[in-house]
Length: 110
Image (cartoon, rainbow, N blue to C red; front, side, top):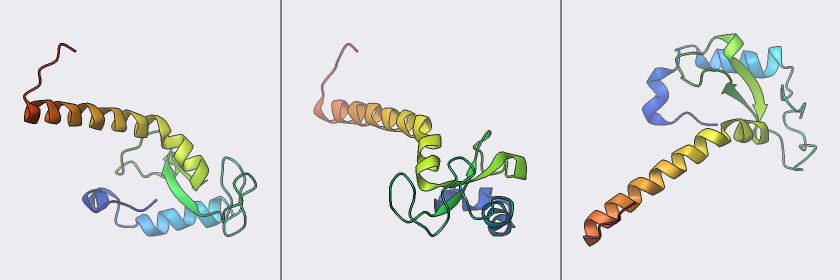
């Protein structure tokens, strides 16, 4: 997954090298969780497999040691990030409700 502009400075300067090493040297061009091969059809989805480098245990970009990184296909990476993504969507929806209530002058008890 692409690095967002606001997080780019949080990654180590040699991130491209680390990412490439994890995906193509250590993992041999395969997802370390499901085995899907980079550039070939994914065995479950049928889409072309693209590997990304995921932070597995500690998701802070600064914590980019090789033991914390894994080569994952898009499907596995999305499944790994799913709990955090859902929590973020819930927080955003709640904040949006507060903003709308403030704009509309609506006060609720919950």
